[in-house]
Figure 1 (cartoon, helix red, strand yellow):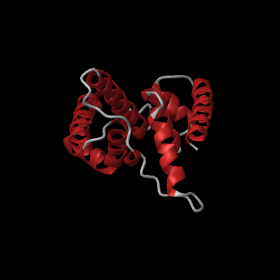
Figure 2: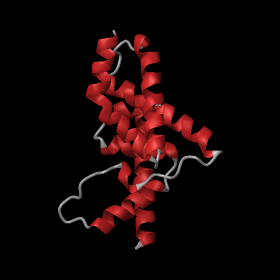
Figure 3: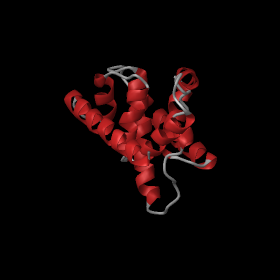
Figure 4: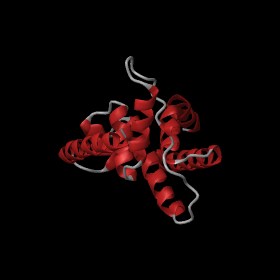
Length: 160
């Protein structure tokens, strides 16, 4: 079981790093959160029955852990807001660096749950997968995504 788990972490560590980058700004905080997430994954691994994709399960554990930790730590002010390095998406041809920076700043202003939904959307997860990870209905995913898109359009246009 240990070897299977280590292989799983090795194969999907990028997923955990993305969540850490989304919710932490300093290298130390990202490393701490990464360890916390891996520990929680290890604790829950024996009860994972394969009812969903392994990445869906990992996102759910990682995001729940990150959001819980940020809520606790935000009272102490240790975690900073989302930095532009969180998404590290290469610019699409025709996009300027300033347009991408404006989008990152807009994403920073979203709530923690909306940032999680944005990450899953950018990862091309299906509505079903997003619903499973966040524990909401598929129709709620659609409603939230439409609201988030509107918020981002407004936030980006305010900056311009």
